[in-house]
Amino acid sequence: MSQAYEYVTIEVTKKKPKKIHWLWRIPAMIYMPLVALFLILTGLIMSLTIIGFFFALPLFTIAIPIAVYPFAPGKFKTYKVTCPNCEKKTIVYQDREDYKCPRCRIPVAIKWQNYK
Ligand SMILES: [Zn+2]
Image (cartoon, rainbow, N blue to C red):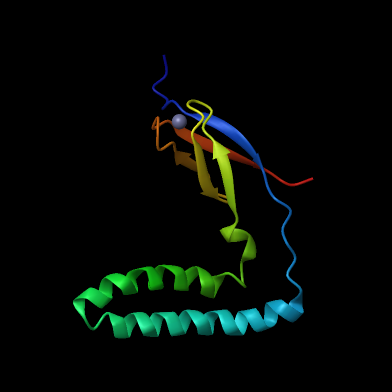
């Protein structure tokens, strides 16, 4: 018997990428990082107090995807996948290679299929 770690593979079809018109995309490349910068600055000011720091943390977390989004729209696409073992539904980001089912702890490998 092999010592290979037990895991299951599921197949997920990628969603058709939404084309953002350049007329929207170019301003978004300028404004969205600015919004992110504003959030980070607000977060930094809030961090000056101990309590403010806890409120500032989520600001930092959302600022990064906001800044990157116009450059890589596909990267933040989420998919609802079902665990083949216990049928627990989980949300995963596109191109993630695998995840561990939060309920039954089984490692699930994801095989991405291109959209048709
Ligand atoms: Zn499971």
